[in-house]
Each structure stands twice: as C-alpha cells, then as structure tokens.
Length: 172
Ligand SMILES: Nc1ccn([C@@H]2O[C@H](COP(=O)(O)O)[C@@H](O)[C@H]2O)c(=O)n1
Ligand SMILES: C[C@@]1(CO)OP(=O)(O)OP(=O)(O)OC[C@H]1O
Image (cartoon, rainbow, N blue to C red):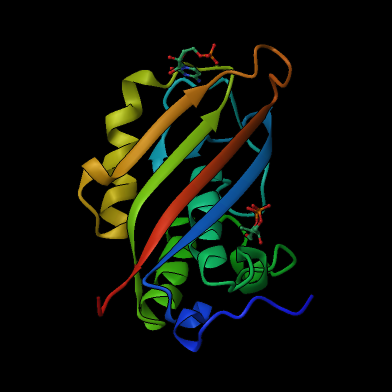
C-alpha cells in the first residue's frame, strides 16, 4: 500500500485550522510565588519552583501555540540554563510564541486551559485568569475556557496544566 493520495491543496502548510496542545508542570514549595495565567494567586501557601516566574498556565498556552505550527517548545526559545531568563515574567514567553504564530499567518481562535492544583481553590479567580489569557492573546474572554481540577491528593506539591488551542489562518 502506498501513501494516501492527498491532493496538494491538503498540505499541512495550507490548512485553514490547526490544533495545538501544550502541557506544563512545576513542583510547589513554600516561599515561592504562585502565578497562573499572568495572575498572582493570593494566599497560596506553596509556589512554583522554576527558572522563570513558573507560570505553568502561560507556559502551556505558549507550548500549545508553538505545537500547532510544529515550532517546537518554549525551552528552545527560552532555555532554562540561560541566566538571562531567570525569574522572567512568563507573559514575555507567551508574547514570543504569539509573535511566531502570527508571523506565519495564523492566530489563536479559542483556548481551553485546565489547571490541576489541590490548593488553594481557584474558582474565584476563574474570570481573572480567563481575562488575562484572553488579553495576552488578543481574544474575547468568551474564547478562553478555564477549568480547575484537584489531583484528589495524589500530587499536593505539584501544579499541572494542559491546554488546547485552535489556530486559524488569518487569510481565510
Ligand atoms: N484548585 C482548584 C481545584 C478545583 N477547583 C474546583 O473544585 C471542584 C472539584 O474539583 P475536582 O478535582 O474534585 O473535580 C471543581 O468545580 C473545580 O472547579 C477549584 O476551584 N480550585
Ligand atoms: C520557562 C523556562 C525558562 O525560564 O524555565 P521554567 O520556568 O523552569 O519553565 P519550564 O516550563 O520548565 O520550561 C521552559 C523553560 O525554558
């Protein structure tokens, strides 16, 4: 059996829509800030251990954008060995990923973000996180879905994020 006979117009470079997926995880420890989606989380007893500000939500959104166009991951653009990026505001990482995507003629259309964190409860911050991510991506807040899960006590010193993004070509 030969390869599927896709016509030239179906080449991935021409796809009107592309899906991206990203994940991130950080260990949590006392004495560190916790920032998610660009929003500082008040009263968090534990914060992210990271080279940057440890914003696992923005890292996953940025990786989702990059993966949608097969552009690698944020570590390629911001190595965690570079002193330059130590403690950096992760909004810069997202801005770079967005710039790479828009530079190739695509833009995000909608985002689904899942944060798994045992404590604190984040429900009261859902609108703030959605608004922050939406603003960073130039989207309406209705295009950013934010879900929270606990790990049911399986990973109390850990934050995990998962993100899907739909990219659309700007010329269609
Ligand atoms: N950090 C979190 C984690 C979860 N929630 C909300 O709690 C509800 C139950 O979560 P389960 O993991 O037990 O399914 C759910 O409605 C979450 O939105 C939260 O607010 N903050
Ligand atoms: C953001 C970078 C760079 O500061 O470091 P971390 O904050 O540790 O984050 P991670 O999600 O592990 O990987 C990307 C890194 O290159």
